[in-house]
Image 1 (cartoon, helix red, strand yellow):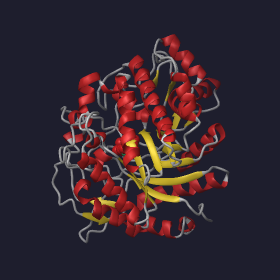
Image 2: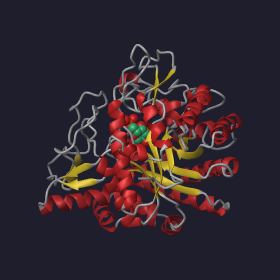
Image 3: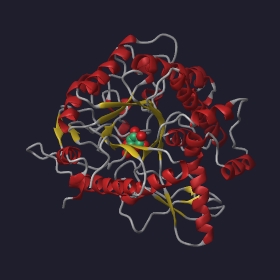
Image 4: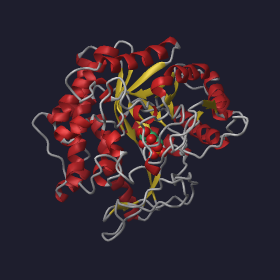
Length: 479
Ligand code: BGP
């Protein structure tokens, strides 16, 4: 039982969730720095002002990765550290910080995998033209990416343009849970997405025009769906869900075009995005140049027909860890997502479904025939540090072990998988759920009150993953 020889065993993070130092060394304010200050938006008002202080402790964190044997570290660059106001003059200190991270990784033979945009947008661009709502962002994004390619292109071989475009736009424009906190802006939601697709596409093309031969793609939050049963109306609701919630993004990355039935539906509703001349061609060209489909996988869902007067997308999201506190959501007249009676859930009501990860890989392989990078997968849980500083996170080990076995099966069945990154290496800020929803191999002593030593402690899962890497996956199959 072996994973491919060059398989990249990794772990991931995002700038806003770990760095802190939110106004240090010239960094500009971001949309998230602003948003977390609005009352009631995040769990107990938590912010990333300090986060887990990775900005000052990156050497210690990367040394822990090296000791574990990690092959790749996926992290994001904060646009506002490079361009404090989004464009204009480059902040040299920002370049220096990420250069240090990249060089430290390389000194340990850890492959840096860089996310260009993981949701923190310079606030100046929001003030100037409402960020993603304006086409102006396309040029600013490409200019920012170009600066990264000029500075780091020779050292970084894996680039992720956008993290979970589907999530930051849905929560930003449909449900008001992420910045800019807008509600039910359906037309704008699709327009914003079109701008993001164009920024992604032009960035991919620029990377190739600059002569780089490395790997580039986007990371999609893929929630695969199962029909509730064989009732035809439910099977159709699954088809509609897939077109509207999954293929709407992945088809554009991989084919450079939107799914037809979904586009027809949105045109009828008046929500379809406006194109400019040349957009369609640029999307098509860029699709030919991506190297992989990035997948963030956490859970699967169930699809059932949702009547015209049924549930809406505006349900309750469980951000407290109180099991069972979330409600069913869906689109009226199209689908809804009831719980899956065959699966267990996390304390935040996310279904636990290892085979769903294999399902994602199989679907991508059949539909797009692209290599896959699993850019995130992990379990958010309450962890307890014992008096002797040990953390027994057996549940996380079981979760990851089962997901990796499913991934192995997908590889055996013909999928090309280049990398697997757990979310996350250290504990970090969960956007809406504070610091109590922990994902890391490394426990960090801090809580929602900004108290705690910020000391790092290895959890049991740290030693487990170390062994998985050492044996190139063989240990997954031991009892
Ligand atoms: C993904 C994001 C990550 C991370 C993860 C866990 O959607 O890309 O940044 O936060 O989900 O989610 P949460 O923190 O909400 O539990």
